[in-house]
Length: 220
Image (tube, rainbow, N blue to C red; front, side):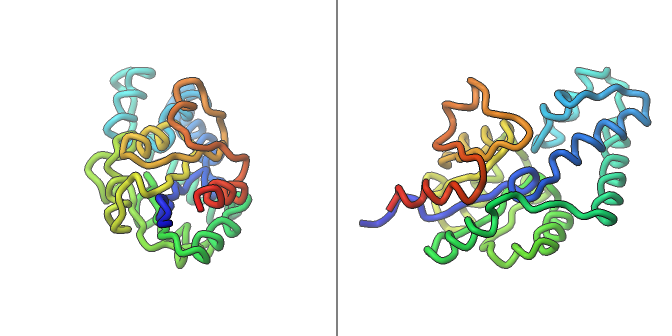
């Protein structure tokens, strides 16, 4: 019997690499330099979110004068300096899951809000770029997460329908994006657990990526 799930699409930050905690740290530090007290909750609200939504959201919190572009640029600079010096950790179970998917002939893609240059650099840095049949980045689609465009595009690049793909995400905005595209969605929680709004959108919740092999085994 032909299996219904034929592809897997991965978010990157907080899902494959342990960078979400760095995003929180350096958004807060950058905002503080500009005189704004940004909280963890403020940063959580914009995880994986495109500028189309994150700019008005933060201006709604801090006022129309909030210098989003400047704060974001400074955050990127601080974070890049830190990563260049200290690197970052790979999330538990990533290689085990990627090996399983490749060995069982699933097509694999990335759908990340990060721009293409940095995404490719990070994926090559941890030696996983070679696993992916397609890499779709935030600057390659008109409407970023939580809109569905990036997951629709990733599915198209794999020559699959969204319903034939499983999306792996850690953030609510990414989950909403994948679900609205028509993908099955698995959450690997990172900084936050799924709330009552997110739980109904999920086909599975696993503590680490390697545990998600169980989902595919049950599809066979």
